[in-house]
Length: 246
Image (cartoon, rainbow, N blue to C red; front, side, top):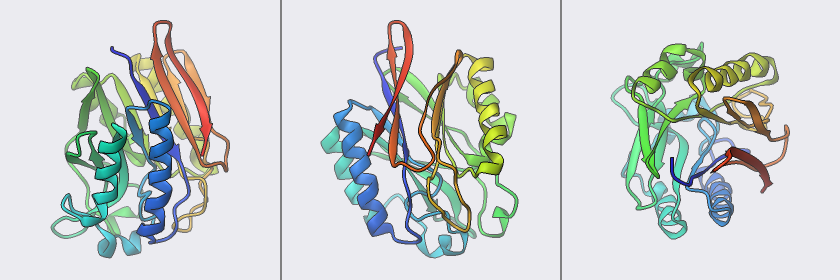
């Protein structure tokens, strides 16, 4: 595995306000670039907020002009970006990620396993999404994907080296959800990262505490409220991690 830095961004999202949320994202991307990060991942539906009732009207396509600031930022800062967005689809939109490479190319991933109640507003995806950065295969996940072992198993079968999830986790679910992520890191001998919201969105109260695990256990964890980056770097001695406040 070549030299690599990956970050998860813990931020707040304003309900339905893509313009203001874009500013928050671009600030985080700029800071990540200064830290030498190659790939930054944001929480579930970070660009719109977790607002199922608004998803249809706010949904994105790969050609969406609202992605232009991120394409420009990716190229300018030589960084790849994963944005949490609803994705346009036939019928209901999907909970998704728009992945913008450091060359400005756009790919997407659609959440495969939905949380209870989400099927009223969203369809589900069917295919895992891996990208290759610095000869490292990185698997993307969204929230409830991580609750179904079949998801990470499918990613491992595709030779994923890293598993990274944008989520919305409250205090009630945090202990069990992060225990599963830590176990994945240990069981599959891989780096696991999680990006969580830190302020109320969609009626949920997220607990923040975005984190990174290696097979050795927890490497770093943000607090409950700060906007922050949690960054992992591969060194000769193994993975190391740190927190950078935004």
